[in-house]
Image 1: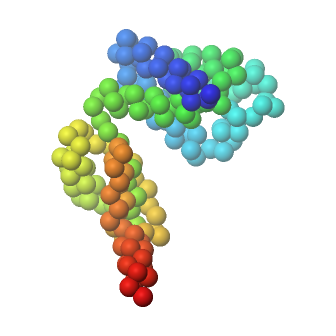
Image 2: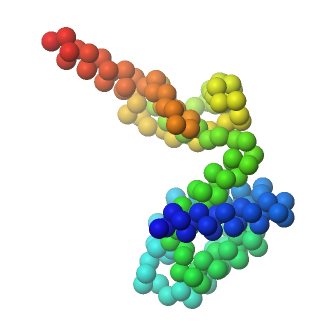
Length: 180
């Protein structure tokens, strides 16, 4: 149910921004909101709490929107969502919106998990390699997971490439079990 609500709000926002030529501004707003929701448990609590009054949520979100410098389109949408008690879908809505904008711009997102932070040269080489494979511009979303020991795990669309040492050790362990 919440995915349907999020999708409808995202589509409306996307279409309005597209009509007015404000996709870049909307992308900046959506990215900033996604980042804030990931980093702030208080913000997530504010939008999901059934105990907080509708008017209090609306005032708090208006203050947050102003502090973040969000566009009028995003601020008005958030105000409408607060009025309708729909703020709880904000994370899904921003993800849907970012997907729509990337699709419109011909960009695919690759989720890259590395054992250690990637250098600028590694990011550039990986981006070029993935662009050649996908045939589109690729935006990297990188995370670090030391448990991989070494290598990368890349998710691009529906395909996954796992070159981590952790995966290779697991495969070796399985093949050793088959022998003995």
